[in-house]
Image (tube, rainbow, N blue to C red; front, side, top):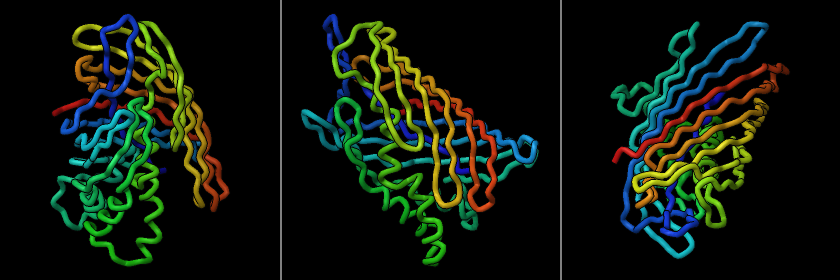
Length: 291
């Protein structure tokens, strides 16, 4: 099973009225780096025996605001660090891909290194809606080149799977999952609103503005979620829930910390083997601004 990780950044502008207009408040030239820590616990029942896979991801993404208009922003994003460890309590460490690795024979780490410092352009509405992402195809191309993979058959066989994670459409869906949570009207502390996002992880979200002080504000969210991954090899559909807490700077709107926890349960159907495997995934993702 391929792990699903989500990219995220968000901002809120607070105005000094009894009701608050929540929207992004950015300036051309603003830069910030987000550190992502993600953990997945995957349990599958195979032949009556539970098998556990644990995924740990560390990532750092640098953003720069390169353009602004009354309706949207353009941001340039580059990956600065990626590490993913896949392990099992019974099988031990299954893979360890790290962009700081100096082992040129480590294909996984070399593929990850190909993601670094390749710019992706993101256009985002002031309400957090992702309008477009371009440059994902350059990420995928760079991964093959950095790993020294030139065989067209190997590229053709694996390109589609990489595009599911790092192609422009996949990145657009991933970013929007954690940016598009702003209300369409001004709100007070205690106000609630709803929206949704779609992709490999789709959610019907219920948000609430919990508190505002001079130094921070808090938003909390709950969601009904559907996690899906369908291709020629597998068909996975899991249902569950998700909780999100956001603490942000009321002056700049830039988040200070975001924590997302989720749990999804359902079946993974392996098409060629004609086998259905009960699957349960628990996840925690934390995002912090480090620069």
